[in-house]
Length: 333
Image: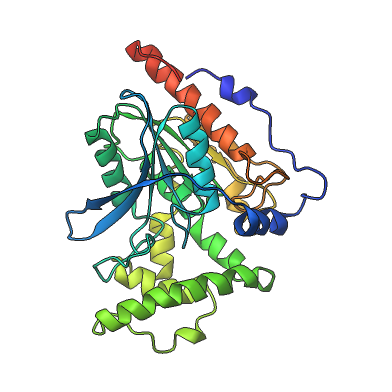
């Protein structure tokens, strides 16, 4: 891989934007981006499904970017559509996939999604390759970023995957869960628990022998939620077992492809382990920790135009593509 991406200018917050909470909330609430997705349903081997929103490329041999959203997000969130638009305008094919239960239709099984559910992302990669993609780049945000990093360390990673970029990544799930349990982050925790309650209620009605909504309103943090729901529903002993086994920080020494991780130092969702490069980290890891940016923020005043994070991801993807194309003698977008 060339190192042109290393010369990319770092994110610098403009006047009045140097606040992590502002960066995290304003783009989420006020940004408006809309792209003409085409929806495809991907049936899974376990009887469930994933809904994929795609933007086809004009060229049949265009590279593919697969975008993974965050906790309780979906493919229509502004940060996903903004990234999709930016890559598509540059000539890429785009798949923005929805985690189980996040597409607007509840999934079929008692389980739903979690930070380590990389078998679903790998199924999306296989779907993209079956559609003709021989160059695949991964982009993930927050929980989707954790999944992206875990996938890029998989020993059976498809040769077509050329690299990935992940933003606002909870590399240490336990430390981040404790960070979000602090009173100062209560606005975010309450929103997540409110959004998740509807899904738990739906599943409790359909699977009363496995899931109960009783006492849900007593839950105050991810420790309690993951102990009761995420862990048992997905084969983990409890919250700590889930956090330990699914934290992407533990695979930073085993990354198989160039991997960009961008974690802003003022991100209210992250904790100190998310900013440290381990001494044994793979040379494939590029960890950037800008002073500002919030959680999935990196905003400019013109919110509806491309954000710094979108330019950054595409620049890194082009670096990965240049290396892959040099090896195969193909073109570079």
